[in-house]
Length: 410
Image 1 (cartoon, rainbow, N blue to C red):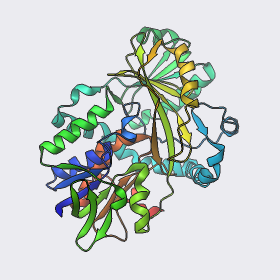
Image 2 (image 1 turned 90 degrees about the vertical axis):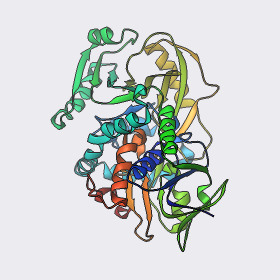
Image 3 (image 1 turned 60 degrees about the horizontal axis):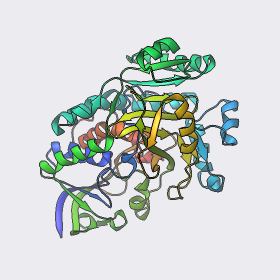
Image 4 (image 1 turned 120 degrees about the vertical axis):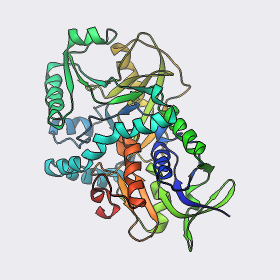
């Protein structure tokens, strides 16, 4: 039976960054995952470190938008009718938590995480030799009409009082910046965020740093995780592992470890898809088509097209309708070449109704800790939530109030 100080269950970007933050504070850590590091939800994202996302994605309260979503008429959000009974209660709770006063309270709770998200990544990236993956040029939000541009401009300007910067472009100014983008009326340039050329490469560089510093990564199934008299155990390909403390960083699979211990959280999965294309022109910034619900991001592999949200059961078969629709529209926006992947990739985003992650101790199990539920911002928040949890676990004064992220809120 192998022994360690801390077991981190889940080797996505959140788990690996959490392991690094604990290791930096003198803890011995073993990472365990059923797959390779970063091969699940962390693999497919827009590559954004979203320094400007002070305000979370909210449930729409405009009846016209709701009517479009109800008939699956909006490409940025699709749902499966067969799964509606499963996720409808979560949607109701999401709607309630998106009320203006509640949403503002949640945003202010998460604000310290957003404010430190990029700087915490940059510290780890410098140590891991990964700064070459980082682009600090922000991202573009594109609008096809004056009506949507006005609304987008007003929303963007709400973040300026928080020390964040935006630039506004008409169609001519946007053409000067990104000549290959066509059919855009106006754009908002969020200047503070950064982006990655290859999100998986960052996870692997973090893992290499973790292993270089003495950490171990083992393959094992979360379903074998269990409390023991001496801490927490899990079965791995190398045999049994016993740890004094454990951290659950399993994202949308957190219930695999939590449910047998009697914990339940109202988590839904927003699925998403991506495909890579040979670039037919240069694209210098990630660009979100706000009116059509997809994003184009320049990556090491080519141009990555990512979709909006698909509401379905976590393990239901893929439905490529959303990405097929997005590709047709995207080809009119930007000259995409041939597809570079055999099939679109599908991932699962773990979302809680208040759009806040779960960070902190388990109420009924001493030595058990949580860091999951990062919704659309797993990459963005990985390093900073890893820091917050590591501070809590090692008795440091947390840099942010951890109370709003406690599992006890449910």
